[in-house]
Image 1: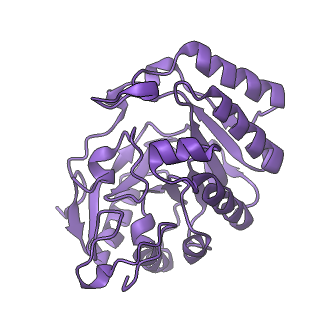
Image 2: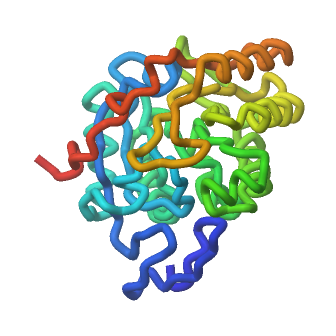
Length: 295
């Protein structure tokens, strides 16, 4: 962290000595929630739910972020590496189907060390790395052998959209490389009953007025990986308060149906879709530090 390059921004912040990265956090590890979560894809939230750990901070800063409280590092409490270790085992004791690390990129080096220790001490649950797809290959290689299921977004294929909505014109190129590395590490999906225990599940959130880009993303993913990955086509876009322009409204059913029709035309069968009821703020968990502190 003396010159941080954990994410593709490679901002060089000296986080070890008080600097704050573009992710919004410094040396301390901040967590906003650690609890069972039932609203992921069925193969992730199977049974009692996914043992989800929400990390504070994010390098992407998407204008439509549903988790903006934590992505802007405005929620969460600092914890030690030892406390993170304990959280993993507490979630296991609650019956978690897996340990689901949400936006952990800015702490990836520390998380890798904690995971290595936890696995050595008997944490046999699948580890899910849940991220925005804006990942450096070098950081992903820190996690090789530790992560079982990669759950990245693929937000845009258009550099213009990436620049407009995530201030990251290089997002398409970076996400392609990141997903290729994830598939290299986990080349085939593997299930234990209904639970995904290994593989890559790529999420794509369909945005209003962006159907053509969504179709292009499906063309790319299925053309590149076929049935070696799962694809989750999401309809839950909810405009943040004050949003203007093309993203000021929810996705229409017609827009979503056009994307689903294209997925069917391509022959995509390894995947998930959403109902219109998913586009509600109530599906966003409260970032109230549940499960963060020891009892």
